[in-house]
Image 1 (cartoon, chains in turn brown, green):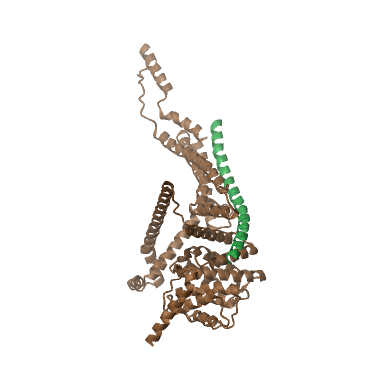
Image 2 (cartoon, rainbow over the protein chains, first blue to last red; image 1 turned 180 degrees about the vertical axis):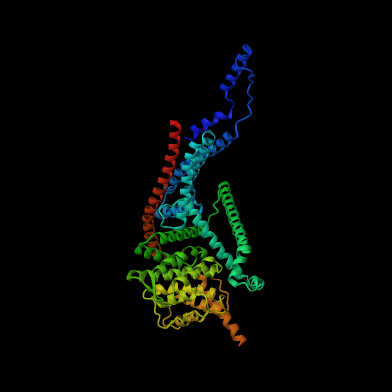
Length: 525
Length: 52
């Protein structure tokens, strides 16, 4: 329809040959017989270029045509992309194919594939709107009455569209959802998040804080905060996030180039720079991605239990890259907190089957969280989880599923104040080895983080753990003894770099540190 | 320890495959229909152009 209309308007862009012929004929007749047109002398019309309206209409029309063609082109590409995603392009076992699929799915999220596909209908809607505008503008010059009909319908459609976008953005349950509504909701969410982070930044720099409070004098503190945030920190935060985005993009490009160079080098010189170790790490990382997706997607309790069992075995591996565990921390916490229901300030597990789930998710969360906190103490995931813990869990937890010390350990690691920490009764805790091994591992890692958090030294509740299990007869498994010794070493002020030590060296290393430390203490005494 | 991990891994990926197939089917259906609608709409514009 657009193209037919374009042809119609196109004739106005060049001089009309018929009109010129008629004018020439008129001149000819005038030459033959001067009396035909009375006193008038017919002149040859001068072509003064196309009328302005025609150019305007033509611009809008071509924009509309180009947009709809472009969206058709992208839709065609999109179908190809989708087919590529669905195709199995790797030969191998179920595990390899699943990991490959997970990699592709992560790519889809990272590259905003769904946003791109959802923008296609939006482009078509834009094309339609442009067509309506062009039509009304064109008809306006010809006849106002006809134009008003088209104009009325177009503006009615546009108004309706704006209305449903706003309605869709304000309410999730509104059935008239459009991609535009999603964008608006996203922007609002992003801006409020930015505001919050700007505020956190602001509170952190207490100097600035006290200064501004002095400056604003009588104005209430809250108002002062709001004004300073909106005027100074908000643009600043925008700038910072933009810089960070650019930085990330630059870093990603750099790494792509590095990987490409390596690939070319290995291709040229026939060497494979990928060692077995790296491959192992890659596989574990993909395992984490798969587990994270599974925990987010599956609602089945038995599948979740199975996933957690697998996760537990991975988390207790000694040679694990710690930063990868940040992927699953939030997912574990989600499932863990969903196992509880809060009434009258007491959190209780919901049903019998969820008790088991609560136990194992608590353990996995503890392991992943302590790994993350010892590897990256400044990670934003940690503070996010702390905030959510504060919101979700009231002061008392009625734990029937997970053992009490695990719940208390999670509480003590996640609570924000020194005074909120609970005592842990280690004396009546008799776990199986299956539970004790990952638990002690998690506590040993937590101790490294905890000893720098509020005041120097490992908190009392954590010190109780080695006291309880080192005094046990017979002694618990070797790895538990090592972890107990590590907690003691951390408490004595040794910097036990756990990540550099492999499992075989850990025993000798830890005992050496403790012996040296004890000798030092003896000498000092 | 390693062998139990392998067992868990194999079992996990079996379930993963099932879940992923289900999810992907939904995913594909949704976007495929969206793209078909887009193509039909563009086609309609073309048809209308022919009749004009």
